Image 1 (tube, rainbow, N blue to C red):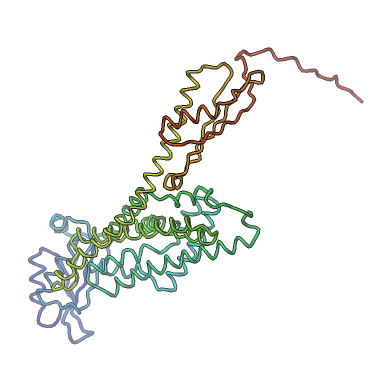
Image 2: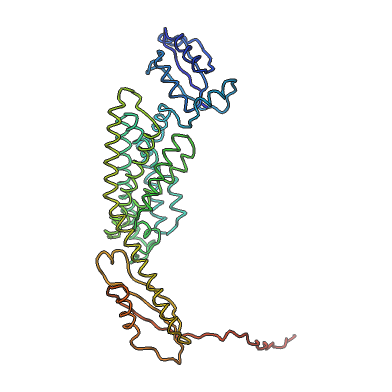
Length: 445
């Protein structure tokens, strides 16, 4: 429930109160003696979704847009006509005036924004190098990226170019600063003993996860943008949703910076692509949701122009996402193909072992050195097979070549097979009687 306080200009008191009576709203009127332009102040309770339509009616009754209007969130309202108001305004979304105020509050001062963003990047970069998911999530609590992401969309919807420009600027400059911070930090750490010499960051799971972006990453960004918009529209869980938005942006930005620091252009490009795709997805989902929710500019006459601007902006962002999604699609397809190849290879070799039924011989493991980049470049898959053989049994000399020929024919592509042998011992499954322990007699002194 909201408590609205409005100053009534001179000569409009009767029209304003008649409007509230017509709306069935309980109100209280106080004489205004502080300024000469207003004759009274009226305050009344109304559900959150009713603030905007009631204020539109009051503006038509004579309330000027430059008059003071205060909207307060209330804990409890006792009124005989409260249930009727709730039935009349059943929606949950807030008014455009309240949305505008919240968007302004979410975009902090530049010094505060960049301080928290850089601290978040430092913590996230440390978490990536430590392979600590908890540290990375903890860093997201500090990141202030929800404000600019939401305020840019709110500014577009409500026709405030200044808010839109600032929101876009903070997002772009902030993420570039995050990449640069991670790059500098990664370079500095290489000059210390905190990182082992020759560390390949591509082997760290938390980093590898963000160097192979696929369509699931796009769903994360779209969901984060929608959740952020809903949390602002309904005033719940905005802090936790801000963490989700930061998770979609800061870790891949830090990954891109580490790729620059370690001289790995593939890591840097993959992280940067993921950042850009997620950034665009968050903005387009927030912009679309605010538009679908029915928010309109504060100036009703600007609605048509803003509508055309919103449609064009959504189309441009959607086209950009579609183009960048080619990369995501390629990674998704190649990852599926390489993993399917390894699984099929393991199944094929296990089937051959089962059919051969050689006593004592065991297929220990089958792995494939076959990455998505190998598929794109046309490199041959390398299959590593480890076989356990008893000591007294002869090892087939041409096993690797035979499997090479079979797998090449099966998958219609050249395959390199490497077979390793280990000596195995297998128990007969029977429990033998344990020998008694020899106990030395005690010696007393």
